[in-house]
Length: 201
Image (cartoon, rainbow, N blue to C red):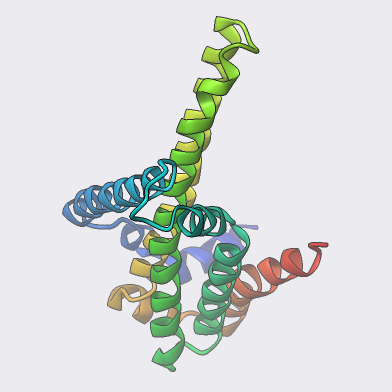
């Protein structure tokens, strides 16, 4: 056991220090992400009001289609699969660049979907007032808020991964790893998500 620990320490030494993004980058990106969510929220709000000048039905359908998570899941799956291939073939920068662009696209798409979802929940929430007691409504509000924060965290994780995969230090570190560890990375990022996807009915 101590031999395995020594081996892993030698292979992964200093790796944990590379997993933290610059605070300025994080703060700036959180601010930008809130703007994206707010813009999507406003666009969805416009679809709720009948207008003689806008295609309300078209906008409403666009909002509904934009909320669906299935397409987002497939984009993220593709991004993770590319990260796995990067572990397997670290000398080919095509994989990490492709993973970065794919996950960045998933991040932007996820923010828009979240903004649309918040709008739908905002307009639907008042309909429960006549049905439930005040304490139940408060509990539902808390659960919805927590769920939104969790979804935001999940979406933000795609941005986090997209930044890590183009870090020069991480690229060099992975390139120096033994093949067995890189193969484990390939299994975790490519094979495991693919298996879960194939198990979907």
